[in-house]
Image (spheres, rainbow, N blue to C red):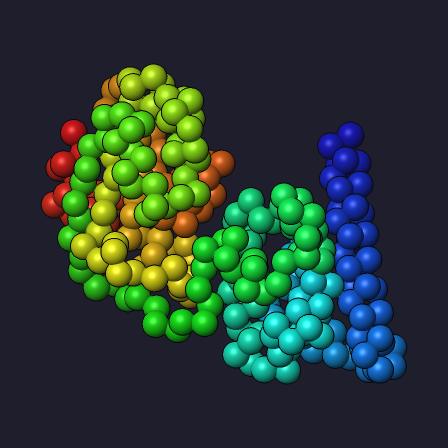
Length: 253
């Protein structure tokens, strides 16, 4: 029975991707390309954007729309690289389900532009000044005692669900039984939201880290500034966190 459900799911996914691909070909044909030319163009695009595979291939219609509308140039290696980076971010964010194949947001019901999707995801793909995560940094650890105190740092990571409401905060901290900390890297004010090659393990991701410790003093969750994989809150293991924080680890008490 399990294998049967899995096969159905694959067929559903394949159907969405195929419909998106067919729609993209139709868009290109509307620009004067023959079916053969449109198919060849699309094949080339998929080859130049490595992340445009699997379930992410559903976005091919929206990506071609961006090209036709002048948001991006799919004949440009630079723009293909930007799209590839954007897909890498989308893959591990709520945007994967929030957008349909044409980047129509379920929130607004409107088609989002390339810039619009970047704005929603809070990423900057035009700035190539990526930060070196290998260089040494110092961290400041701030114990958070209340939701009101946590709100003072909301601008640093506005997508963290723990900051959505006092109810969410209490749920994450089990009514205050767990201890919550912000770990701020020395460059957190200046680091830019630019996805690095190892996203989410990049300069921006490491610049602000949220840590929860349970009533027994064990690390129960670690969340990056990107809010990567928030469903599992497993950005770093406890040993990895200790290494990243260095001497500041002792402040997590």
